[in-house]
Amino acid sequence: MARAAYDGIADWYESEFISPQSAQDDALGVQDALRELLGPGSGRCLKVGCGTGVYADSVRRLGRIPVGVDLSAGMLRHAAGRLPVARGDATRLPFAGASVPAVIAMMVHTDMPAYPAVLREVRRVLAPGGVFVHVGVHPCFCGAFADRADPAATVIRPGYRERRFSRDAWSSQGVRNKVGAMHFPLAELLGAFVASGLTADGFAEGGAPTPITFSVRAH
Image 1 (cartoon, rainbow, N blue to C red):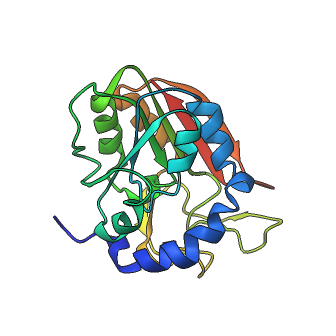
Image 2: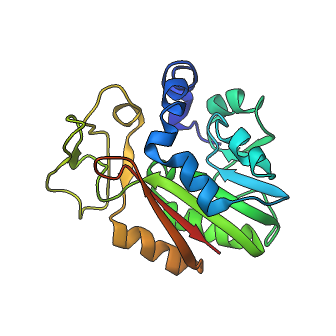
C-alpha cells in the first residue's frame, strides 16, 4: 500500500497540532454537529479517515462503538490506543455491504481527492436505516481562495469555483501547507451525495463570524 501524505507529519500532528485544536472543536461547531446530526445509538460507528482517533470518545458518549480506517500507518500508530483500527483506502473499505449502522467523516473530505468515490463506498457499507454524518471545512468560506488571516473578516478571493488540489494556505501553522487540500465547491459536494445514492436530511454550520464548518447528515 502506498505511503500516505500524513505519514511524514503524524507525530507533529498528534503532539503539536491536534491537542490544541481539539480544545477549539466546540468553537468550530464540530462536536455540536456530531451530537446533533449523529445522535445517540448503538452498534459500530465507522470513522472514515480516522487519523489519530481523536473523536473516538465523542462517539462512545453517544452509545456507539467506534472503529476506524485510515490510509496513514503513522496516524494509526496514535489511533490504535483509542479505537480498533484498520489500514485501508476509503474508496475500498474493508467492510461487507450493508454491514455498518453508522459512518462518520470528520474534517477529512479535503484530504480525499476522490471523495465522491468515498461517498459511494459509504453508501455500499451503510446498513439499511443507517446514518452517515459528514463534518468538514465549509466549502464556501475555507480554502486557498479564502483569506482568514484576520479573525474578524474572511476575504473571499477568486478560486472558489475551481475544483482543485492546492498546498496554498492562509496560515503556516496548520496542515494544509504541509499535505495540501482538495477543494470541492458546495454544489459539487452536495451533488456527490446525490450521485452516491445517499439522501441528505440534515445540515449544520459552525464557527464565527463566518462559518468554518459545514455538516451533512444522510441516509
